[in-house]
Image (tube, rainbow, N blue to C red):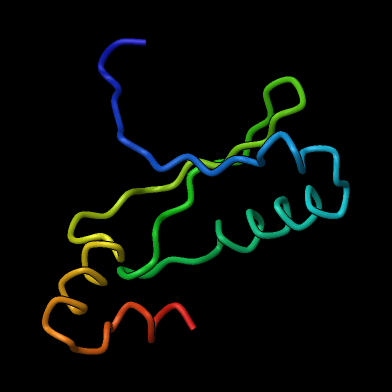
Length: 88
């Protein structure tokens, strides 16, 4: 398709858990909740899809440092990492 391009983060169910019905249900439930969230600090959820037996959900990406990069900087200056606080 011409004239349409967007970089997305693609979340998918890995093959070793793709047959776990409870996990698939949680994945779908998460998508139903995520599509309702709208905030500048939350990735925008676009869709939920399935190709053959593989589920996926694309969402917006963000710019800036990764948590791994922040961890390395904080470790190098012996300071607590703020992303650890956010992840807990």
